[in-house]
Length: 217
Ligand code: SLL
Image (cartoon, rainbow, N blue to C red; front, side, top):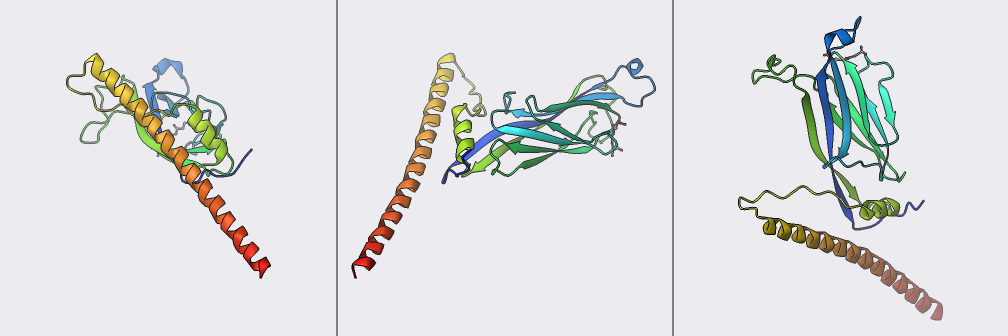
């Protein structure tokens, strides 16, 4: 696998990570103090799986869990567990290209809804709780293989602000604009790559010329 880096290119991949939690029916778990079932996950912003460029995700749970270090090597990158308490966990992403360093995210696992004063809300106790965060994975000068895999798939983007008179035609126009912007971005990337290559070749040529000059003398 190529570990050569793609100079002058930055790819931003938006992600969402966090957890959902539901209250367990009391009778389901006799002899246990577990009150909730939860799932913690990391995905693309529209729920897309990110397995095409993520090799492995390590979820580090609270030490009260047996085997707190949970490794997931295939999508969906998520862990479902039951428990009684909230805690901070870490989510380490390792990428398909070995030379790209891992990214660690932190998430406060949430089991409860809270009132404004910080007390646990009793009225919404039976409603599922969701706690997700948006983040961006930024790859600067990504290794070539990673660059190729990332650009082979469409990179999800956030929808632009809904317009007050969003007629269908306006939507179509925006979609078109987005496509043009995407194409423009790709062309810019390619241009940067070619410029870097060109600079390198020019420099090498100059070195050869200088060498030739020296040998002539
Ligand atoms: C708290 N600081 O006291 C937190 C720790 C830990 C939650 C919460 C373990 C489940 C099990 C579990 O739910 N730990 O026993 O397997 O609230």
